[in-house]
Image (cartoon, rainbow, N blue to C red; front, side, top):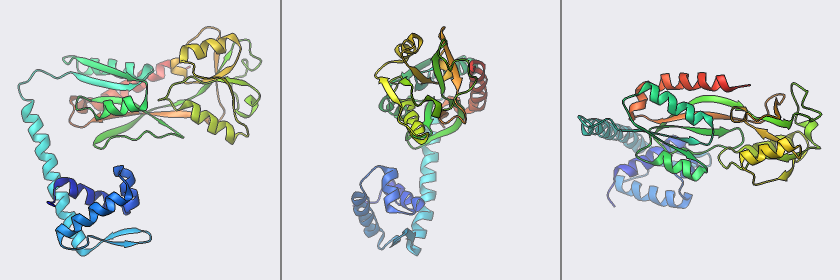
Length: 302
């Protein structure tokens, strides 16, 4: 076996995690596979890099030496890649900007902000329906900037090497037909909705259904979801008919005959996170893009 850069990255991952278990989870490989790989790496370096203990691992003197040099080498390699990309793009036509994210208005706001900030660049976008589709887009070499949902109860893993910044928080509101007995209330609690029939839009990326169930269970009951599998438009039609109530993010709902009421304490909410590639042309204007989207989003809130 010959030690390569990827082996140095493995050693760094274990050192940073402080545990083979945690490092294996972060690298998404089996613990046994990581242990065997680490043993082969240690053989190449001529001795153990870590001492094992019940609480995890600690660097040996040899390990400290290897980690220090590995950081230098990996840093130099990253610099080589960055400068090479800059040279490779010199005198080429401006590349298009690829914007990705889940269904909803926030991705449209981000795309508009990018057009305003970088008017000389063409743009393409992807509205993903599933976690798999969004993750694949984020891993693409064409990816520039996007939005990912971060639920309170559900966290979406991101590929390594991307920069992130919290964008906006969206509390879920309860949608009711305007004639519903609770429609006149300015604010609702989940506990008082225990006897209601529910419809939850089937949007795999929103995580709304799972978060709603968890919040209702904390309030002492399991929501009675009478209508499942509906897309957003169908779910809104069911609510408007009076057959059920629903949980929705308010920026995506403007339907006559339906009122939206906030929940006390905002027990169901998500955070939308701005994510971008550091070597993308958008990196230089990301502060402006962030502020622009926040303003656009605020204008849609009820």
